[in-house]
Length: 201
Length: 169
Image 1 (tube, rainbow over the protein chains, first blue to last red):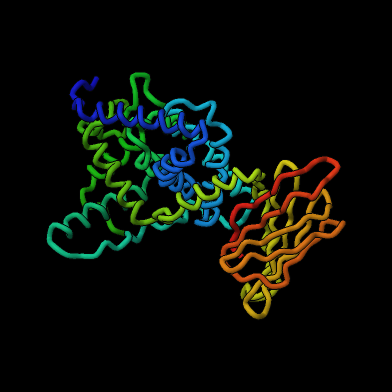
Image 2 (image 1 turned 90 degrees about the vertical axis):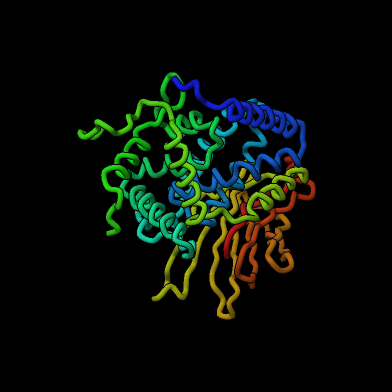
């Protein structure tokens, strides 16, 4: 049980839930602006869902377009932030798999390279230490199962209050008390702990 | 399954702690840098949604095939099929020698419709024949979108435009 969560964090989450609920309600009544705000806020998450499923950039764009169009028709069934995020993730993933099956332009997820870390430039000593940590994390993520990589990549972009809904949407079990660390994060931490300088290969 | 040397390792059943949240923040930053969403995508999606007001029907990508005819992929032909509630649109894309592409298409069920190809340049417009055939001889490469305009006054009262998702020619 974690009662130590700062009150401000909880307040921020409640505010977010209320804000999303009112945006959904406004969008249902036809507000393009409200819908646009939801699209802006959650598209980066859906982008990662589609790309983690192995789609090319252009296929990922098509899938996001399709999913958002379909949400418009389903707004009546969605009333809170967790339901919204969960529905979007499930629908994006399903649509991504459908497009993968239909086309042949996909890049299999397991061929994605974890060798090269995107270059962030080098500078101060602090930056170099940071780069080492990032590289170790990147290498450790690359050692996880494809399923764990997908889950962590997607969860990392989900709004925190919606973690449980997103994990459930990805078919991952969620503890009865609430979101637990889960197998994938535990494995990642074990990898990082067992080898602080995870071999760069 | 937890690893055997789990004496100081965190268990999967515990709630998130600050280390987990910090790791997730780091993972987000890594993928943000490695594979960022195109920054203008939400705006384009919102624009697309706004088209709904024009009574449109959205076709979905149903199938795509890449036929490589010649060596080194120089002469490629792609066929793409889109499905919507009222219409199936099949197109075949062939490269022209001048860098443009030729697009031949078929509508099913066959019917005369006005068909527009939105491109980065000016939109192109053709009409399908009674067999539902249409063709654009020269289309600039890049992003394009097909819009099948509503039938004038069909016996079935079909009155909606059908649009495809954006496609890369």
